[in-house]
Length: 278
Image (tube, rainbow, N blue to C red; front, top):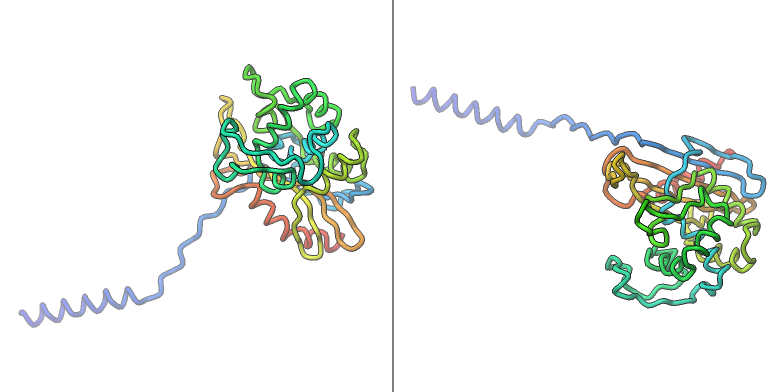
């Protein structure tokens, strides 16, 4: 009887070991939720001809850090900004910035590292009336820099999930005017704004652009972390062509990482393919 029990135990053990060694079926990977809203818009910079359009590109959303593009033009036109590296402003504790932004910042660093306290300093030096007048003059989106209702924070928050909104179509139109020198600002303001934007490679294309990231607000006016917004706007040059682009994606779930940078990296890979047959 003991021998039979031993054989049964040995057989069961062998089966368990064999089962463990068998290849297991691959586990299904979670499928990312479809975007809440998506837009890819690419135009010929000179003519405005649409080269690629996909998704919803006519709805306005907060520009987030892409607002640093028009704000640079305003800052140079007003004489607050001087060139690519002046003014160099020192960090102050009152700025209450995240650790990575607690450093001296000039216009080029401001755009490359997306330093919000530098934006707020430019707006503060303009003052409420001049700031609003400059944004209105540029015809940028809805032009509303009043900020959150009742909070008097237009100089610090109007472009961050707040009152100022712009569509991808309008972003592309603004960039065309920046490149053609037809914004209502000085020639130097056009030149310097174009110069300080970060550069990237995309196959044979040289890209200059700005990312942005925020979240939508829910019906109660609270930030909704399940609706991350990523922007990437700018222009691209190859040997004989120049295009402007606006890329926008609003997610339908919480995501890891920074939406604007993830969108930028994906778009830089997509751009040569999208324009290959255009």
